Image 1 (cartoon, rainbow, N blue to C red):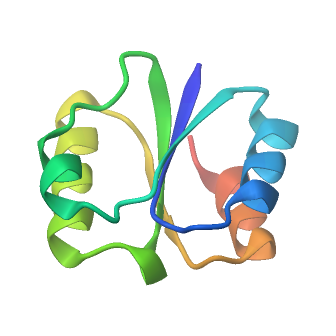
Image 2 (cartoon, rainbow, N blue to C red):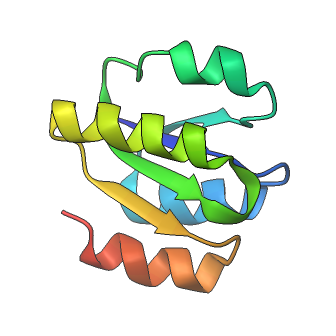
Length: 93
């Protein structure tokens, strides 16, 4: 199982929270080079996508949302807050 984090520069605390709750491999896309990230496919074993809203462009957020929706992958939007992420992960399917 893979959890994809999109956005953010310093996501160590978020990775720790996800691995504690989900026991998953975590991949991180910083989203800095928007062109390249918009063209990427989601990793094959992705079971959850977390988008850090403060650190991604609208086009990248929409691109990831569309790809996750087509694949039936749950998507969580949050700010760079471990507490907010913790609550959203509890409610994510």
